[in-house]
Length: 287
Image (cartoon, rainbow, N blue to C red):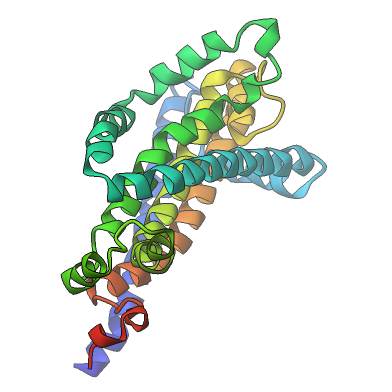
């Protein structure tokens, strides 16, 4: 049994490698069949990998790394603003049911927004000369709209997740809505949920940011991974288009891989029912 368990990760890695090889083969086969019919819409994987190496390790790499940096910066702008807004509104919703009901339609609408339509509307809004300097931050606005509901709902869930004994004690002490209680009880109870939401928002937000950069176009944004994809599309530079697309996929995959390790640990903590700070009410400390 132990030997089988030791081999399981190896077999998973080998099957994943086999799947990647099969994917490359099918990609090459499709590109070859199209090329012999004078259709060059699918660039073969070897040309794509070669172009990717040029974009990462030659004099052209400066623009590539600037693009990655700006995309991550826009992501952080959207993530920080979404986090701050949720940090203000979620405690109010957790303490006042009427405010939670008031926020529910807003959160539901944000969760169901068609992101492509939002980008088009924002682009039209920021098209005028007065707003031209703000136009490059359209992806950050979209990122905020996508990430805020996730973070807000996780915080509200965390606020309502602690033991009923603690709530009874708070009611007896008349401390349900005191600032000290929010700081010492509600926020520690919400931490795992918040960390999970931030991890999930980061991966999803990056996808949305790159998509928004592509839709906004290279004429509005100076730097960004999506801008490079948009520019390659505009000039029909297919090897660069495929290379930048693969780079975006690899970047998102790497971030998702790291965040999956984090979220797995957090989910185990949540499922395991990690104890809260019972030292605030010593009489309720579990033996």
